[in-house]
Image (tube, rainbow, N blue to C red):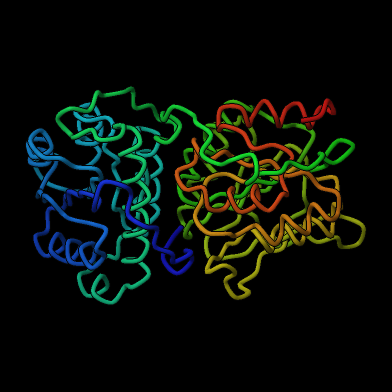
Length: 390
């Protein structure tokens, strides 16, 4: 999710009172602005601030914190140096990197995710921009509250910062470290039969917590040489460029942002570019990619729904769609059209999702043939595309 492209929805505060936040930035002015933006929501309390990574480490040792908002470029100790030490100190604490909307900022943010950061938020480059950036403030609040809930799940009910037992913090999504549990009831999720026949494309949608979930799925899945793969992740321009590079490394498949008019080729990953919708069209008896700046859908651009609508028209029922973690309901309408055309939908389960909004919407609507922990999704994909069923 990103500036101007995110679903601006604010989750409720997790159980246990307001989310406790530490803000780390070398600018006192920026720290003050971020603090005021966060505390405008009653579900958040900024309990500490620090001007560099060294002070942040010292402060964390004696402060009960759920989420850290961490700047990257700081004197004494920068954010990337502090990140692994903060995680090692209290592994349940979730770190959100604050980076600029630049290629360098995007690249560093993706690297931070691979090192264990929970998320990132693209930060306006000046104090005047932060003053007026309502989308930025809403996104920051939304992510802090979502990851605050994850932090408390990792610590366990009733645990304090001093009593929580550290657990291993891997580069995979922090939510996957939570002991899987069925949070929905059988009455909430009614599975439908999977489509018949082998799919001709793999489609994935994701949002909050999505980059790490995508990395995990593609690392476990490896290459898919006989299918094209279409990915829409709520993310701004420049960040999607770097996301595609990381997906290429994780999957060992060529991956890049979609280009308008590009022919669809098997064995490639196509990522919806930030601030554009990605669709597929049938032109002169061949499948081509189309990107556009049609209005945001579900407050998002790129959005999952337009991608799914176009793919349902072009591929009919020969589609496997995977809905990963994310806030809101983007993808619900498109998934309904896809299943009506005979396509198959699987979703990440609630216990391993950072936010069970998007996957929960398709699951509770009865559109899924499987609702699975993140660690089981790649094997399910492999089975289905090989023709052996879900």
